[in-house]
Image 1 (cartoon, rainbow, N blue to C red):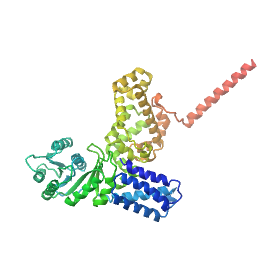
Image 2: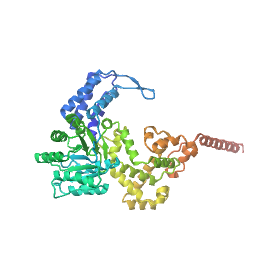
Image 3: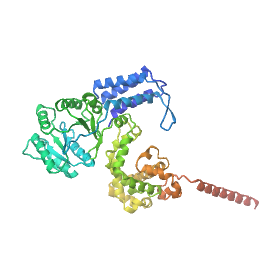
Image 4: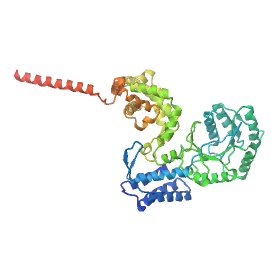
Length: 512
């Protein structure tokens, strides 16, 4: 998503590695990489210049502490490169903040006006915002005020049906009168929020802007949100400035950030218009709308992930009670291919896998540069597991023992037998990872489910020891097993006994 932006900061950090202090010379070298990256990402030139000046001023004027204390009081050694990254983080956060994701809603009926150019994903974002409000225990109504784009009204009705909320449309009325009439209908239908999906154009023109101004005059919306395509770059900033001049918008919603967006709009738009970014569209599904957090976006740009957003994703899709039950089963060695399939389905529900990977600290640097996550590979894995019988999912060793099963599964999923074998190896690796996390959860221990793994690892004696619990897994999938002290001692005693017996037999032969 932010590969172009991240590349420059990553190169700058690498150029400072090995340096013992921050000087004007090595700071200029690092900032040169950042400048190129920002301009390539289509960040507005003046915004780039001001950002770099602030970073340089802070870097030169700040005393570099070689040791700091963390929250636990432990002393940590810091290098100049880490100080530089910290300054960049502070300035990126300031560039996109302060955050304001609030939505003002008057009573008895609050109003939100969605505006933007054609093709920015405005109608889909309208549906996403409606689902967000439903989660807040509100009852929204959608208004199909885009009567010009073919199938726009039908698209909004389909979204309304999927969310089970009413959609108001009347082909006999012009958009300004339609929106005014919608406010009356909202009271009749007992809806407390009305969202106007207005029309867009391929370019800004007076006709479009006059129509939007008339809708705003008649309905007096509580919020005017401009939907901006993050892939457009500097055009998005110019569009935002013009919409803000004519309509005095309340905030932005950036869309298509899960695609090939270079991210320049996210850094420029707040600085140019002084209006806050409210939400980020991170996928095609109605649930893929995130409240904007400048800290999280700055962290992702610098390749440090966004653990807060990741935890929120898990909490939204994972029941804590079910996570605890699953953790107990895994520690007892009852993790099956069906669980593996369920985990894949869960990841798909949480949004684009590329976005999830970027939220994991350090994960973006582990991926090859310029390459993302190929979600089709996960589809192949699903097809293979779904071609197995329930018994094979519960006991994968059956596939190992009987080659005809492997052949049947490969044929049923449309894959090769080698791919079936590869899946079994990945499953074994995943189980090994879970075993490791259970012992030392670390950062993953903060996530729902993994937290219980860490807690129960401390109580493994109740299960007869962790390695004993994992030993219930099918034999053909077990990694090299860590023996307990008792089992290791017993094994050593037996080995020594066999050695002594062998030596005694040799001596007896010589005597004879």
